[in-house]
Image 1 (cartoon, rainbow, N blue to C red):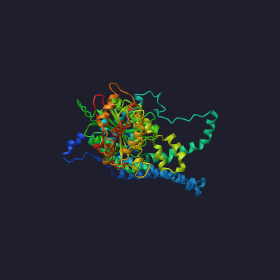
Image 2: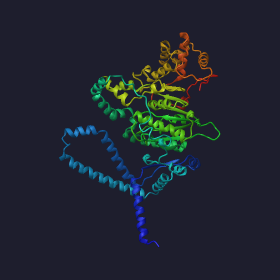
Image 3: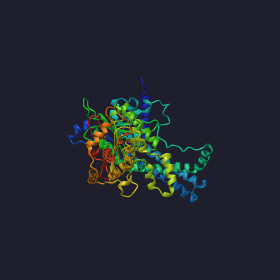
Image 4: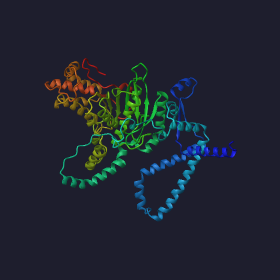
Length: 566
């Protein structure tokens, strides 16, 4: 027989353990309703979900800890200036640092007490205790039914159980250094010249490293800055609630080969016996974009035709790490592996859709997985370097070139040329971000991306004359001007299709093609304009305007038997 004292001691230990779990537990933000529940209860006027209602003690203590976290972030980003100020004032010395450390210690003890009080408040909230029990059960037994229960809660993603790891499909010994990237070709030098050059350029290497790992990376990917994410948090929570409650989105945690955790959202629209949703669109966001409020919403609004998979850059939202090119490519790789091996999509049923800087990971994906069905690049560019030179002082030019090529080499065009499949480029005619001149449509780097692609794939058509007429067409800022240029050269679409089909009669011919080799200049001009209009669509708006579903199209592809404009 168990004595009452033993039972009391055991219950006390269990209560203490539960309190500790409440202290170190995740911040619960929202409780979702599944779409099925929402439809059933919507008739009674019930909401789809609700924000977690923290009680008074938890609410106030959580607010104090939130302010402390914000002040820490602010002091972290301003630490170089703060340290310089303290040094000039003579505060960085032992006599000054000792009392400061005492104050800091007292503040930390106070914050620890606040955290304990927050744990007490959570312990007295049955809703939070129920959530904790589901989280623990899912970690111990990650069954589909447990994951479905956990899906109804929005909480700190660092506590989310793992759903997929690259080690499930790859040999850890082969990929510890990360996936392969295209590297700038090194200049050939003699052994003595190489050593001397390394010594002379060492200061430049050090400065480049410091720039790239401090303000450079944050300028290129402002969405990775904690203060910006904190300011956007209400919007992100609302967007995530919409994806889960209206579209039955499934949030998953993936682990890339570099150890970064990648936050993803999958909306499955496959139905038994139907083609609807069999094509998966993987979305790559911009430098301040998140899947909660980003370009993922464009294919989702396309009438249920596509299943959609969105993911956040390393350092964005729930994803960990920093968004350097290698980490970006590693993240893209595990997202594709997850889509194939866990979600069950064929590689030929995957479309990559990217906005702005997302063109880097999108072009890397089609270069590394050439069987991918197609790629759509919206408001993207050919190379980061011209855009970086635009915003930096001209005297910094050599340093900027070295920094970009060594640490931030977003070479979209170079990667895209390795892909043989269908491509669609969407150009914003009023784009103010990826232009190198003020309000100049001809300085849009999307133009250069198109020209490089056409010149690689159709070198005999894109001679000087072909480039000239395409540039003339690119100078059109509205549909009327486009049509005027097109009709001015009397482009015969049917003739162009016939010529291209005759070059590819009964087998796949890899690019570059030699079509146009024995053709007069008029025929080359027609084909150049025809191909430019098929590979690029114009959208009359600025860089950050969301792309409407009506403007999202599958890229054009040439069918050997007939003209098939998809």
